[in-house]
Length: 454
Image (tube, rainbow, N blue to C red; front, top):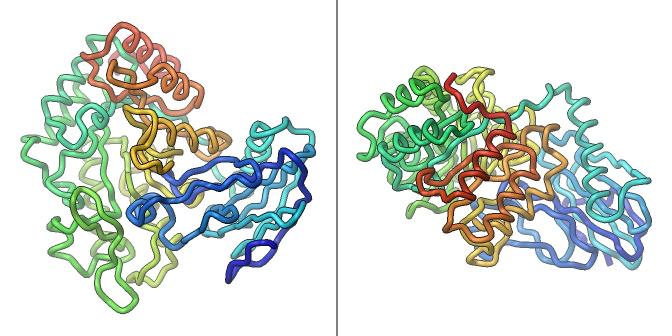
């Protein structure tokens, strides 16, 4: 029997044979995305924390059947691939479900869809990717979107220093970029520079002069980049304490819990509130005025969770409005990298996007969840979303980390190279051995970075 879900209507049926595959697309960057042999149980969150932070909060799919966000594909095992996608994939949050009933896959959805059937494609996952890429090209053309821009090369502080990064760590690696003749366009400061999550303009005690650091990066001929989670306010932040009315609300009142990380509860900032919008606009405008023109905006799925908003807007609409606010504040020439992002609702509003879970220094996720940091989880979803690269945006497979402490570093470097999207080094550059330095130099140069000062 097909899986019946309240609010979903049957929209398509596919006769299948041996070798059939079902492609399941995850809601946001970290949500597992891949094609499964029909009958294989799909990846699901192993904890409520993971579901809240890394999947779609409004959905609770079980392990029976396939649950996809915005687009689903079925390779029938006989040479055809059926792509079933939201009629408006970028501005809606249509969900799809597929389940088998005998020799038929039944697909249902909770909103309007379109169906495309393609034949003459390669067998297996290659055929699925080809059919999805054809759909993506058509969808962007119909939406009147501009051609995707390539991502600049970058060095990022995260995987070497984590949240303990210091100003002198960034300066040391900035100097190493020049000394080692690396083709790095952007030097990007990641999490750890702010006093709290949400208090972006208040530096931590490890950064005596954040603006001066930006000026130094630019003085060395590099572009300056910065990380922030614009839709989050940590419970310890001055933002949450002083402006509780700016936070997304439960329908019955009170701030809506949006997850837990950094050892604290997190709330979603309601950017439809005029005060919150003015504040966030001022944050990005300030950074932009300092000369920062590369913004890694993280955990931004928090902007699309259900809740009572000041404007009454639906979650996806509010999310897209928030991204437009950010774009307007930084200008069209700045590069915006979306991370932890609702993937399809971000199309046309970001320049590059993380297409997978975080990578890691180890191969497998500690908790076995394919949304959790690890090379296995990162490879899984980046391959599943490869069809998007250069069509919707530049795909970001996560950082190139190849130092001696990284497991399977040769395989990880090969994956980053094969993605053909963003190349962002995140090792401590002075600790690279000969192979790692040669590999980093080669991949940055191949991605089009400039080894000389601008």
